[in-house]
Length: 133
Ligand SMILES: [Cu+2]
Image 1 (cartoon, helix red, strand yellow):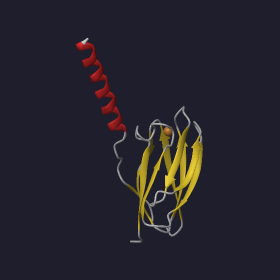
Image 2 (cartoon, protein in one colour):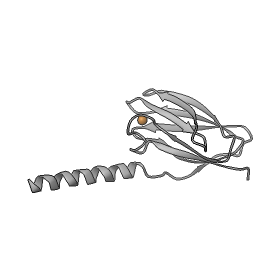
Image 3 (tube, protein in one colour):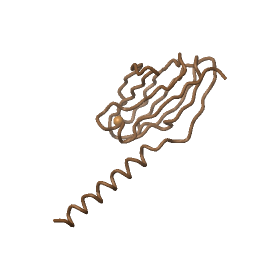
């Protein structure tokens, strides 16, 4: 009985480590300033967006071409720095969806998949928007 529960703890620890690894922040990708639209290709998979750590500039419009390379349906939700949802779009399996987001203010725009548990598994990221350089 005691041995059994120890094994269970080891399994949970392994899952936690795997989730922590998935959720790790990727290298920073800087785009702009462009004084206009900037197209950025993003890959969605189970459970990540790549890139997920983006730096951009106020006044630009980021045009995300999000390709869901996984066999599962996902979602892309992005919020402005105040936490208001700007976009909430479905990402069907093996399809590419275009999402346009005007970056009208400086601050952090968080994005994530709104399916249950997916953001907790690492399916999230942010666009840090700076004032013009
Ligand atoms: Cu998802």
